[in-house]
Length: 331
Ligand SMILES: [Zn+2]
Image (cartoon, rainbow, N blue to C red; front, top):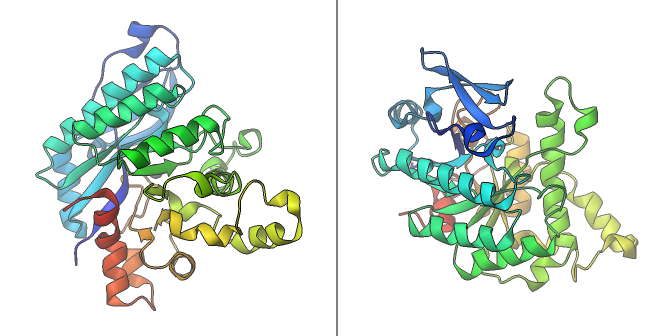
């Protein structure tokens, strides 16, 4: 059975000194240790330890072979988005990292694909980069769950999504710069609590803003980490929609009506949670994703779908690769 991972991350092995080019002190960079490991730096601060699977396609392909994956879609780590920077800088780094992602894919023997990042702080620039990225081979774009505090119900985000629908560019929404940071600083709670809440917020904002009532049905949009807390708390949202008019926002229908307008990845790490996801979304709206090659990703890649009972062979096939191929237009 083919297994295609839609949620994995990369870092280029090296890139130009952005601090030297633009000034400022908090640019991302890598500090290599010489043994295949490196530390991601944000300015002078240690951000995350990584290893060569991030930048070396041969290492990635070897690990994919060991775990039975046929393909992987790479996307930037949100640290590289740069939404908070001036537009010209955002445009520059988007091109820089998008071109670097394609360079890795070109050494991927037809098994590696990439989603682009875009300078969402300027919607025209974001649309232009999304189109450019598609023209050089990117299979979609990855965007963060908000733009410097403006959520998925922002008018600019709507314009961007409509552009992607018109140009047939799939969109993957990844949580970043998580809410409640002042209370989740310890124990990696930004990742374990903040991220799922952030993604839930992005889906709920999109639904209640009425975006799906106005956006083209051609839009292909997916959310990371199984949609965060969204599916588990859909009943609460639905109840609120029916019993408080102010909880309806500008949506024409109850939230559950819109489940056929987006997809989720499978990175939920628990068979019961995956079954709930498939029950609610249907087996054509969940796509295998790991968050490889990070410690909070699925370590035994593909294991969760394999070990989740009650999925038919056809469902497994759809989750593992069929849905992703159709979503991203991959042969
Ligand atoms: Zn991720």
